[in-house]
Image (cartoon, one colour):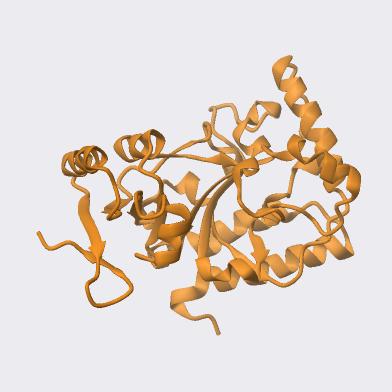
Length: 295
């Protein structure tokens, strides 16, 4: 029986088991359809059960600008901190040498269910000099919900035999884009989302969720995905670019105790303007923890 609080994560775990079975047994190219069905039948009906999510980051220009514009810029997987990110267990030496060619096969922005967590502050919040933004993604635009997933954790990796073809096909697709000839999508670039939704159990403590879109889903001039009324026929391809609107989703901002005063003032002004809760954190005098500064 699925528990109400974890129904999205539990249903995705069942889906990924089916995806892995398809990879191993039949190599059928149908996983994108499964993800569409998952969003329409699980995520959207249960969007009010999406947990509050947090993003820890440095208080740099880009993070502050994202807060101010209520947007998020998806980062290519080449910037991820897990060496196994997106790699099949079938990867051979030639593919490993060519990994730089795959760094933008997918674009990701990561979040956690953990509020005010010391490890997250240390690893991602610029060692307590950064910020943590709290989001209510139940208010996301429907087309973005097709790209929001919890991350699953496992001791074993997927075994997909076609990843080496993706290196070649991604190069050909980008070349075609530059030459504006827009060919049909190459098969090996479809159905790769599952590769970025499973990580080692060594990361399980992060309780991660991701916004994820693949290269073809963002740069979707490659195929005619639109009907005569210019409506997208495939919801996974209905993104404009890597910049995602999160307007109305930002609940609050937490400021690390080591943040510089000029950044703190700027962020406080933005929060006041956008009616976002603003919290300054300080070191607890009794516990190994951070607590909200008394105003």
